[in-house]
Image (cartoon, rainbow, N blue to C red; front, side, top):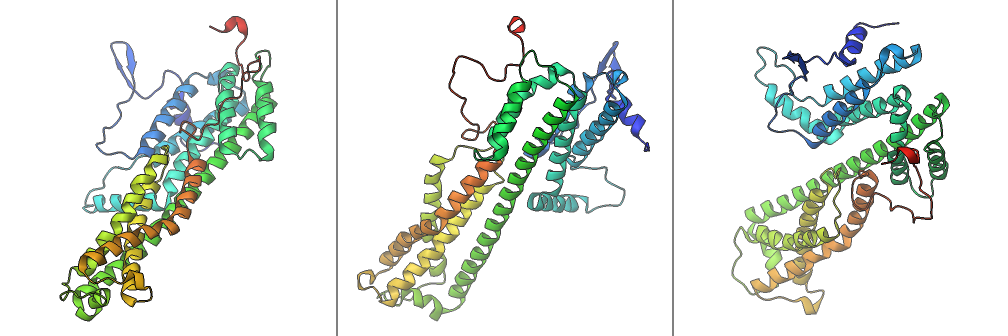
Length: 383
């Protein structure tokens, strides 16, 4: 069954039919619409789509068999799907004055749920997988080293598939090896497994980030309620100064305690950056962790002031306002006991969802043992 638009898509991606302009006998590519603000994932999807288009242009559609031609059509539609999901600004219908608000809401929902992001990357993965069936043999072999890195980066070392995949790639990378249809099917299966593992890691990182955002929002709302109650009720804010021989505290007393206590959490977040290796797909986790540390520091600082004012620990008895603020600052460091587990889990999440170009994610190369691994060109062809 051939659906409408199939011929258009094939003609669009055929070499010499790039839907561009002809100036002076030369065909110019279609002009890309300029945008002042563009998300990182949108730029990456667009760039990858352009690269896949260029690789598709190097193939010869007329010399393909019926199965490869069907794959060609599937690649075309997958690329178009990815580019469509990476486009934020569709044509604005007449009379829609709330288009900007809807667009902002759409971006927020996409950032939170990641539906359009996952669909765009899934389409690119599909195009890249099927492309292995229509590319020339040399082009297919050129992907093998990067696929080997993907296997080592996307799977745990104890995974049963790692050794088999790497051995298969090493055999297929031999210069004298001919790539047949069964070999292409095996390469597609390996790339599909790597893409699936990477997509799962990204989904897990986004879910973990959303969980931290909810936790931080609830804690911040609770602290705001405590600060508001302290502003309105004199007797309530006097609880935080009950042990001190100090004048009647002002309405800003409880918010000031929270701000001072949160400084400890923010300072610990800044010190934690020394171990941050940088990740291409961080999903805002470092920023979310920093805000959560500040809120947790404010909460533990207030609890420390209540503990000092209760008189349960005689050594913590305070009598002046500077002493109370010092206790809040010291107990604000206690958030580290709760957030260090979150930091460890966030590091594991980022390492799993990290790109193969991220430092600390790419596995080290094996020691040179006298022979090269994943050589895809013959010695006489090597530069």
